[in-house]
Amino acid sequence: MKKKNAISAVLAVTMLTAAILPGCSSGENSGKTEIEILQYKPEAAAYFDQVEEEFNASHDDIHLTISSPNDASTIMRTRFIREDYPDIIGIGGDINYSYYVDADILADVSDYPGLADVKESYVDILENLEITPKEGTYGVPYVANAAGILYNKDMFEEHGWEIPESWGELIDLCEEIQSEGILPFYFGFRDTWTCLAPWNSLAVDLAPADTCQQVNAGETTFSEEYKEVAEKCLELVSYGPDDPFAYGYNDACTAFANGESAMYPIGSYAVPQILSVNPEMNIDSFVTPGNDDASKNTLNSGVDLMFAVTAECENKEAAYEVLDFLMEDENIQAYIDDQNAVPCKDGDFELAPMLDGMKSFIDAGNMTDYQDHYYPSEMAADALIQTYLINGDAEAFLSDFDTRWQRYNRDIIRAVQEYNEEHGDAE
Image (cartoon, rainbow, N blue to C red; front, side, top):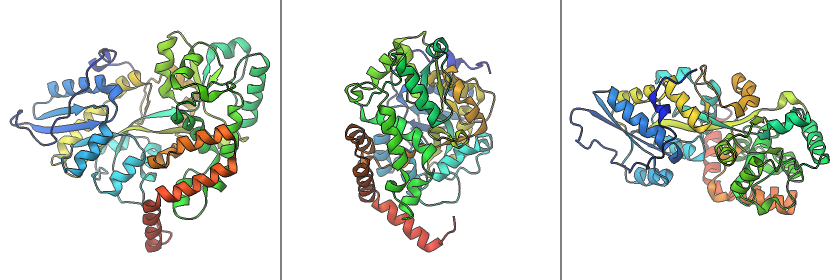
């Protein structure tokens, strides 16, 4: 699909983040319905500034304001407490979305016609994030990201290395790369959050997609479900630098860009940083093959940006008109081009070439959400994983994971178990 909208022409321009404006009509656009979006992706501020400009230029009856602050999540929570609600919020499909749905902050948008064009797998991902099942749909998935293994395509072609489709093939490949004097992986584990990238992409292969829900219901433990994930994650680290914890995210991106490793287990979000170091680098990716049976592997992909109408929005019809504009193919394509994103909408979109190796999974809808989208931030799961990868004590790590989960998730566990007692096995 070719870009038709002028949005794409200005995405490279550095723009200042818009200041937060009041959520209610200000009166400065008399006669127009005021719609405000507060969204959490400051790196996409230029795109949203242009969306705002083009929408307002083409609509006489609605005035749109889009804010893209650096601390959007904190601002959202503060405004919710003050009952000063934006009409629409743009957030990720993670535990914050779960909290907002549970607190009845978001409106049911199951009557929004545009949902019919969204891939069912992404609608299901949002539904699965609900703490307890609720009737309705509370978000419109916009774009997703994907995590697996980035690789140096030119290096692979030069050496004749094959893309692995099973865990055994991945380990054999690492051994082959190592035997040729090349480092298989680079990691940026000094920054604890980067430890979640290989962890998540292995967990979707090796643990049930609803592991966290099962633990909350008292049906299993992380010690049982994450044992193989922990073992294989540690094995991957052995094919990295001697001290993978000495390097941060930027270091790893730079090293991979400079050809210091053949592969980098990270999400598609890292590509712009890598290309900023080496714009000519030929990058592709493949799904982490955590299983010995390739048919059991799945793409680690979650909703990176979704739009939700707040329950206090007084002009739902106008909000839907704004969503229609955002969901136009040319606008989604412009966002994809700017952010190397994966569209949640069905259609003939052009994906970034570094996602070529994942395209068959995307097209088939064979994708599973990041398990850390269910982890409470207070638990600091990334730091737990980092500590484990340093000391290698799987038993102690898994035990600690279970203990901390019970401590920081107790309110959710109580809500889930009360729901199950009331409803039995009913969904």
